Image (tube, rainbow, N blue to C red; front, side, top):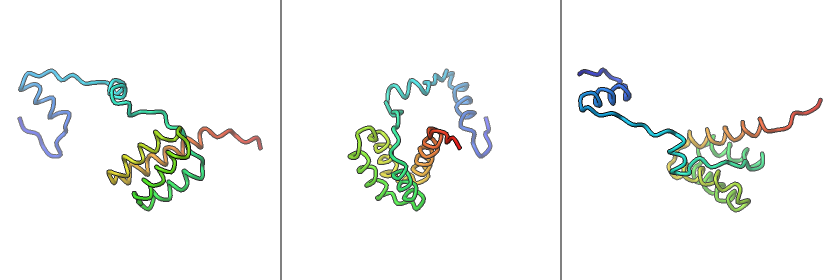
Length: 118
């Protein structure tokens, strides 16, 4: 067996399975979520808070993101799932993931806004 670089992980696992006579069993995403409880419903904070988080995320200021997450958790218990995710990402210095999460929240907020009747 010869695999070229970059190695395709799925193909590598398939080859290993064949050679070792292993039948891989994959757990569904729903089952993983049920076990870990990671995918909690995120309640969005006010627009102003999202704007502050976005600015901090753009500049990659993880310590202030963490402080702001603590502030959100204290502001309203409904924001705690979002605050926990922000804290976990900031603690791991995952700047791109923090920015993506904040932008996802901002997009979700924009979708949920009532349409204006101009």
